[in-house]
Amino acid sequence: MKLKTTSCLRGEVTIPGDKSISHRSIMFGSISKGITEIHNFLEGADCLSTISCFRNMGIDIENDL
Image (cartoon, rainbow, N blue to C red):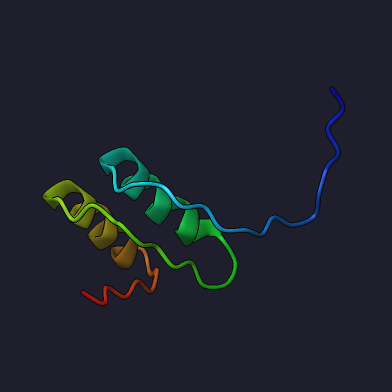
């Protein structure tokens, strides 16, 4: 198997709402360039706490629920 490096990654992934994935979606979205749109986010207390932590670090996160 050969793998080639790339300078950017773009795409769309659809997965069901899940606690671990919800945490990671905030983390990856916070370090990415541009706008990240997340659907099916699991709004448990700990996932909302992750949003709060990243907001405290200066990441602009909107919650349109």
